[in-house]
Length: 636
Image (tube, rainbow, N blue to C red):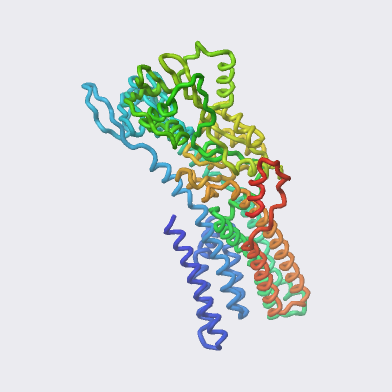
């Protein structure tokens, strides 16, 4: 892919250089200017011309490639070599950009394959371990997965208790406790003790393999824009190519023009009817929009992404790392008894654990000096320690027998809000708790409000539980949400939204989001997300700022307005020039001025996209609690 795209860009650059050389020689009245223009046309147009000839020969079909080649030759035939070179350069540039955007799937699939585990430790009949390729594993084989290593294949735990990081599949930041009988998936990470696992699926049937398959299938679907271009091409090209010889023959036979005048008018028609201005209607404007987006921290992989974004009717958001920060923080703390140095004891125990929840608790008590002690960590249970003649336990288990109805109701309310509970037990009795949650991003509410104001349907897709999903959805004001989603379920939800709204978008940050990103009409990735998500996505928010998503959408809408203006203007000029040519009002110099002048005007109109956007007009009046966010958006 890189070689092909590089070759196309080199051809475009050589064409531009030779065109400049020819123009310089012509301006200085030096010889060989026509030779330079001819070489420019040859360097920039040989590939498209050859492709047009091949399609004509094999499929018996005319295309724009062949029309542009004939238009360039026609311009040279009547002595306008510069115009022929200019036509070739613009068309060559657009072809190089198209080649880059359509061939990027190779890198995306390679990125996914690089993350797929390749080897496993198989347990032999004598108890010895043998490293084998994952493809060699069969159902019912037993494998051993050491602490800190990737689980190579889907299976079921037959011995061991551990904590597994399933972020690659679920996208959730919190590890999951696993014990005998639980299912584990290839591509996830064993954070705790070694596990013995029996294989339940072959390497081609694992959930990770299905993710890769879903991405490949989604990328094979043709875009709506590509289909539209083919339809226009099949109609436009035969009409123009048929009109030129027909005009020459009929005007020779049935008018007093004569063959020389008829041929002259035919060549003028070929030049003025060439889609040079139409090509320039989109390419320079799109490049300007992409440059503008890059300047504000948004990477757009081609103009098709912005085109789709402008027509979007529904957008789905991943929760963790997209709408939320992706890191749990302590939100509630309560102690049922007045126990001296209890915060120090908590910090002392948690400081000896690397669990993400322990990191959040240590951050909450950053200014508290830890109490020295010996701590034992039990997978799936938590931390235990004997301090000051008491046995302490901190974890997800709570002894609630002695709680009052009010305390029990308080705990139930926190769990219903989707918060993760960490209980503090002393000698088998609950004495306090800490509640943690993943907080929404500060810019999420304003982003959702913007899209809802424009009538875009918003949905949150998350692998988290119902309570957490409901709380986040209510807090940020999203239209709909779906909880407990696996990657294939997210993909199904995206397909449903696509069928209902035709043009939809998906924004996420994890490997588990890759199939949904590829299935949606438009995939958008967070810049701090996984490499796979960024490779699959059509747009990447490099600064991880949802407000930049708003700005990019406004830019896409402006791009669409400018392209429509350019297309209508260029078609109008072409029709006017064609009519003037038939009526013999149009001389060749005026035809060239009209044709090239219209091209320059649409390019200049497109370059308006480099100008910073005006103050946002679509945001509603904010509530007092998000005035700061509103003010921030007003200054994008």
